[in-house]
Length: 416
Image (tube, rainbow, N blue to C red):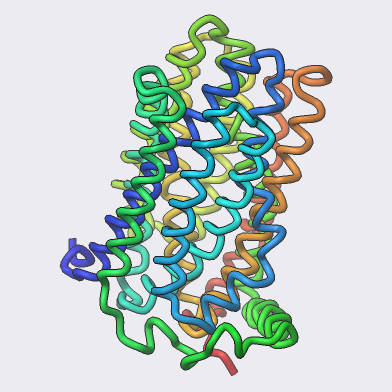
């Protein structure tokens, strides 16, 4: 694979892999901890997911602007160091069983992580040729498949043998490793600071708001980019429901007595599907086109979501999960490889500053709704139906707008 010949990409890739692996293990173990210790309060698990999502709505004004104005390498590395320190604080709260304090630390740690992604995305874009974006997106989907394949299983095993404190310790070590790898990279000045050198003290709030508004104007000038970004709210809503739905399905429907075992199997089957879909994704995009893969994949995913809701047989459910993963992966590759092609590197942070809040707005809204209505007002079957309808709406929207826009839109919308 051509992209793996780039040593900077390899270091960033390994750093991101280590960070995500630790986070997946820690988050899954924390979910099992909450369900075990507070089994009569499933909304605690939903609240934990909210702590991962809500910070975006607090810091969204700053993350993209800082990634475009300040040193992207220092932002990414410092985020890892700070998260490692907060993870140590999380260990203390869990040791003394201060659950409210633990939620607060999760919120702060998630808030810091929001500054990491735009900075890392800008670094990656700066060290790659444009024709490698789709290849990089496909590789990231493969990694996501591996996390789904082994993440919950590793989280379950770590929680079982090392306890919640051992799992969180692994999480903290992963941040230290990621930060060390990023600090060891040597990037060109124009990659680290594409808009020139600026100090944090030199930034004014008016400049921050002006840059954030410029991100909106930049997105609006490209109708194709605007159409892709508009779907992020609904994607976020779907992500929020699906972040808790598989474990709820096992705990409250298919296997209450063995929900940990089968929750791990869900992610294994979904991970296998992601690996298959990631392998076929680039081929499908080349043989068909991005619009067909995106719209067709979303339509099939919506239909499968409805079928998952009415399925009561375990192995049929797991087989459908595998098929869903194989269909979602190429959709993610399309979006992950398309957006960087439409954005000038000097504006990547500003654009991401809008993508993530819209995604997390939908996710936070859905998690809040789930916390209120489940399980007293609706059951898991209804949740699947709602997700299926939302995905269908997004597929229709993209099916109507993208064919025309993709023919008219140039690949890079240069800042004017």
